[in-house]
Figure 1: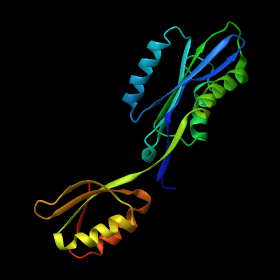
Figure 2: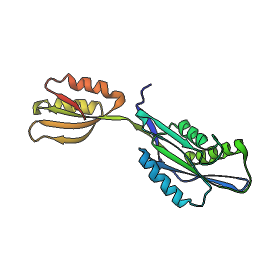
Figure 3: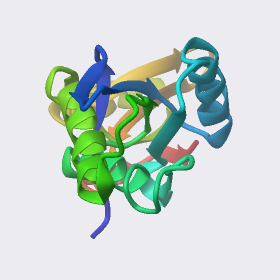
Figure 4: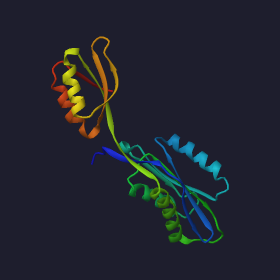
Length: 200
């Protein structure tokens, strides 16, 4: 199914979980590229330099999705995967969640670790602010001035967002259209004789 919208985390505090002396602290970052991930990881490792593990998971680029997770020395599948599963559960994109662990001296076992990393991540997400984002396309509409009313009617009726306009010679308007309604809006604009549409 083609994706037209997704969730992002716009505000969060730390997530926290403690068991048998081990402390698990979850932090989140908005990321769009792997370079963003590297920068955020560097910040986390600097802030929590004395933690034993810096486990993480991220999910970026909703239209060409890429996910990755790391156990950072914990037993395979006990840290990164539980973090990623929470990201998927909340339908989040463009997010990096890092859970750092301060070892308390007692091993928790596989099930204990999975619960710890899942719980710290969930604590973070439950207290965070999640917002829906619509995927958009940018188009440029060119036309002569007498067609202004017809073009503006479509823009108003379809609630399209103008982000640039130039009326120096002919009229040129740049607008954002939600991907889910792109086809309908383009058809309406295309029916106005004399209008030229260019995808940006």
